Image 1 (tube, rainbow, N blue to C red):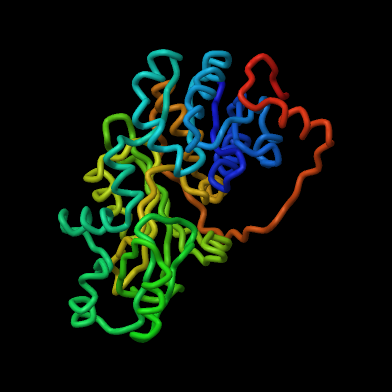
Image 2: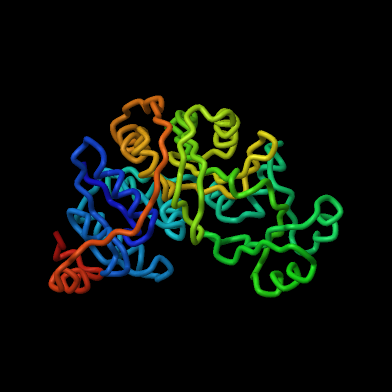
Length: 335
């Protein structure tokens, strides 16, 4: 089965490729990325360079590759590419006889914007950290004390996130964070979790895999699998109300047993390979479900701890040069 993976240089794209390689199915991986030094390109069976997703020619180049390769399924490895594929999903699937596993545009819009995430949770009666825009700071301070969290409404990997302990730090953070949201600081870092949620073609959640996590530079670097976490059923209800397709990721802290979600990702998680090690390969299962119609299995998890670390690959200069010269070309293939 041919699998087209975007964002081969991103942590997420690399995680998708890792899951594909961990599966029993012998997937044929076609990876794309704008940078010839992206590690995932060298893990793939075939590799192409594409423009940045913000480049007007991006979709045209991708279409030429899809025309040549005719993959069975397309998986998206960066946040910035999600909306492109969501908005063009039906046309691309029809033209190239492929499946694109991506949520609808309105779901991506909610997930991308932390204020819209808060409004979705509030409107539907789900737990959330108290949140305001700058105009509502006085109201927030009447409801909860410092510390508070100041972060960009649209952002990832904890970039621009500030823990502020007083009004002076709050004002300083507001000056340097563009388009901020201000939230109560829920619980402690030891109560932070990430959950991978899998939604089938009927919109029904088939699996929730939850891990307690520790962060470094905004990414999970230690994870502890918690089979049958007590809040998994609530997370499933939230996912179904949201209307996502395929993979979703919730990040939250637990306050007095209640999971207060502060981030939703309408995509695979960078921690997907960790869940695969624990016994649930969401990438493999979702491909088989959306392409072949196979049922998604019930997770059979092991309560294990996982610690991430740096690693490296060695490539010859000729390989880098070959990929570098392959930008936007479909007359040559890098194998």
